[in-house]
Length: 266
Image (cartoon, rainbow, N blue to C red):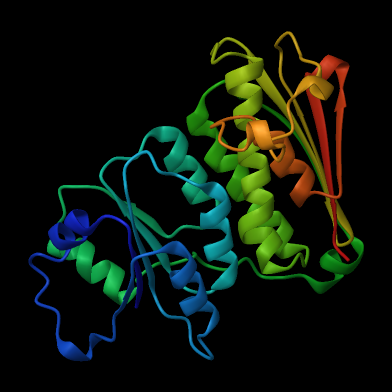
């Protein structure tokens, strides 16, 4: 097991009743760069990964990089508290579990055993994968809790149509999470009487996703570039930049109420 311990008190509390044996094979790192370097040095196998994160210190970029570095490894997060927004994003990125106090011995054993189950795989139809396509068109209410189901749907479809694991398990669910969150929070302003319209087209060569809210729209050109010096330390404004980094095409229509995302499966 590889542990990133950014919260020593929480680490000690979590393992207080574990009685770990010396042959468990745990490696502990105290900084993100050293932890990432340690993961990159693993030659074989898929060790369990465990992150002890301070409350309110959610960094999707770093978490995504860790997930992609060891994409087949079970990855768990232990934190003092986790709000709904962070929880949904973690799960969308393929995190196997988010654990908050109070802890039990079962929590520790579950992490040590890596007892995560990705579910029963859907039987593949090679003809469908090579020649077929799927089109979906549906509405969801403006509730953050509805995002996870759509992200998992995207993950399932993209995996079935042969997109690589880094796209189907991490990047595409994360993109959908970000775009839907923007539509619900900034577009519809969490008004549950307003809907978000989702359209999905997927084939073995590409996926196209349209997300449309019922808000007032915005001028996307006015959104500040988070990579510029004066914006680096701002806590918001990175969502659109992230979408453009991960997708091949990001287009805004209808005054900013509709975003169209496309990813090619090269």
